[in-house]
Image 1 (tube, rainbow, N blue to C red):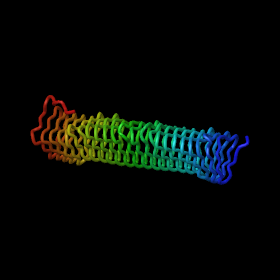
Image 2 (cartoon, rainbow, N blue to C red):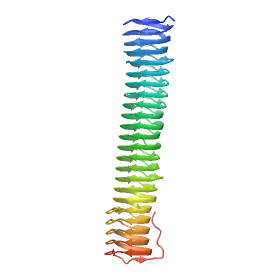
Image 3 (tube, rainbow, N blue to C red):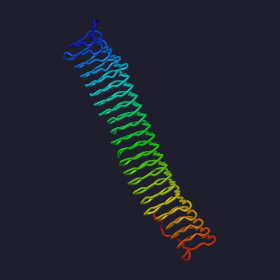
Image 4 (cartoon, rainbow, N blue to C red):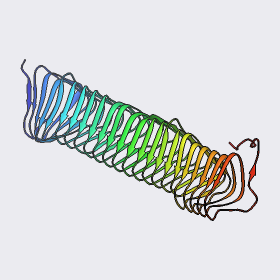
Length: 405
């Protein structure tokens, strides 16, 4: 193999090279139709290629390389202390560029490793993509694992894993195993996912569905969301219906439609659901608001419960000074000291010290010191402590009317 050398600042027109092509600093190579190099193209310093290029290997060092055409590298494309711009498509076995890589057409390789930034104007297909800084891609990204140290902004995705140290935005698709983002994550179209873990803020398009979401700060879904576990450190919202396993929110949680859970909801601040709220158990430190709320296990409310049709659980517990609007229905209903409630229905009902209710319906009813009610209707026992007020005489009946909900 004889090869060919383009001297410093030189300009040549080539159609084929048998062997290696050596290109020195500030040289220009123009393809005669299509440039085919049987060996390796080696660039030392800045260089420019006009037209399509095919070679066995491509190695650049200490330069800015511009390739104005489609590029096919049978083995590896390497850029040591270099930036490479490909104005057409790029196909290689492995791509490793220290500074910046830009590919304006479709890009395909087993792996892409870029120390600085990677920009793509079309699609990118690889097993692994690792970018030290920013990764921007207009079209679809298909890979097993993608890592970006800074910002990631790509089109539709078909991935196993996605990791970004700063922020990440995708245009829907699927990330089957995990998404890990240090700052902010957003999907502008429906996304199927395994797990999402975001340190700051996460926003999902309506129709997204996956296994688990864990967000340190703020989370929102712009429409319906399906999940197994949702955990938000601060504020969460779903602009449509939520369907899942469990919810854990440190601050406020708003759902415009219904929220149907197979497990527990635990909210440190407040939860507001526009329609129905269903699950096994609920614990709310502050305020619960819904058209109706039904739980097969327990409901514990620290502040206020506002429902139009009622709150029902096997065990209902209201903390001290709680307030409710709408009926309370349960097996065991415990109203804390100085709490204020409306109608109460239960197998066992207890009004704590100084608590007040409008009407009480139960099998066994206990009124503690200073408790009061407008009416009490029971079938089993009625226990009253000191200074209890029942404005209408208590009624013992054979059978209670069916409870609401």
